Length: 504
Ligand SMILES: Cc1cc2nc3c(=O)[nH]c(=O)nc-3n(C[C@H](O)[C@H](O)[C@H](O)COP(=O)(O)OP(=O)(O)OC[C@H]3O[C@@H](n4cnc5c(N)ncnc54)[C@H](O)[C@@H]3O)c2cc1C
Ligand code: SF4
Image (tube, rainbow, N blue to C red; front, top):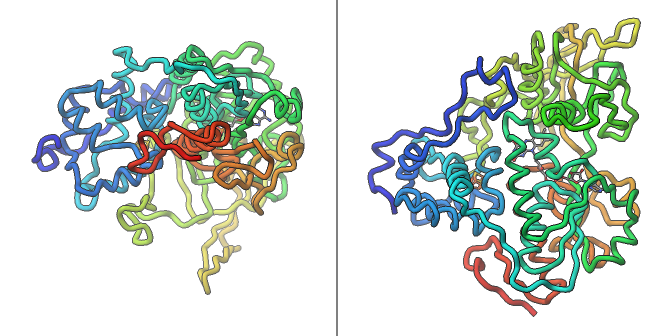
């Protein structure tokens, strides 16, 4: 263990942020680069508890007290080796994980929890600086080939693990670039894209083949994929957005959040041929109404109180919106941990993101009644109403308060109310996969209803988090290894199974 009295002497200090004035002028990461002295100080706050609840709080089972201790001892290389043994991409999670581990930190019972995510990012960045993040080329290459469809965090983690186990891995991605939502959903101010490129270059050197611009089920048939590969893993994400069935939703100026965010991420990346902004179809598969979605000079209403909505807020402010309002029909969460989520659960409480700090009016208990357009079909206002919730016999009912109905002027409305399911049209339909009532792919130990076809990540578990996608990618890789070889040496999350495990 680190310093016995560290948690009594040192206060929590996570990543420093650039000033609001500075960061609103660009799309660079909000967080300042890590500070090694600060990271060591923060690592001393870890109490190395007999039962480290943080370890269980992390979906990857990261060995948190162990890497904290190594950082305290200034043995950064060991810290990285510990982290790397459970997490393929700590440089992603160290930046954008909501850190359920911190909600489970024992210190968090009566003090601020250890700044685990910050320590994780620091270890990852130090490792890249020092050149410790090396390729993991297998000593012996197997004959068998695995196709991974979709290059989000689940697909990338699976590809990394399968490649390490010796398989010939090809990742198919329909978008122009690798990364899934890391690339086209999450804005650069949370995750700059060189972080993805740096990792993809390593994976390519290790032997993973990437084929972008290939829509499986359209550009290449699923039958061909099954013929050419010994196993197929689907990590196609949950891409169908939930929509609002209200009057005026087809007006020019009402858009899905992902269509808006994707455009801005492409602009920041100066993607070639993007100038025309003709993206063809939007994420719901409908024909695009207008090409360019921008908040510049507009009053913006973001509908949906979650992270995607918050990313829209940050983007709209950077584009020069006149005013940004974020509305949610739920009740405002409490400022502190809600009694319904006691420690060590991931706490339900009000979260203020860096985007909210940059300027945003947040309204709770507000629903959208209609979008109102001008004579040219452009959005000019939104009709809103206050709502409350009635809980009776375990059922939640939404109650509208008609006397609160009002018209709010807005030229841009962004729908950030989540995603319902993976796209069935094409790949999923062709394979005739069994789906659950929500439209997600049903699996048993990552196996779908089709022999040799596996699924992991958001397309299987529903919309979730990057850390869960990495976890699922890793576990699916183990399942495929077992399927193809009858045994596996790939690490499992469960404690005590981190080393070798053989199964017939
Ligand atoms: C705006 C936004 C912000 C978010 N912010 C955070 C955050 O801060 N922290 C966090 O932990 N999580 C965040 N999330 C959630 C997180 O990004 C997802 O849970 C995660 O990316 C899911 O990973 P995945 O690999 O399952 O799928 P995805 O990342 O969705 O990747 C799926 C990939 O499959 C490709 N694909 C689909 N069909 C085909 C096909 N037929 N052929 C070829 N390729 C195909 C898609 O193009 C895509 O690249 C955010 C989500 C959104 C939308
Ligand atoms: S991946 Fe997320 S939950 Fe796991 S240790 Fe890192 S910040 Fe915590």
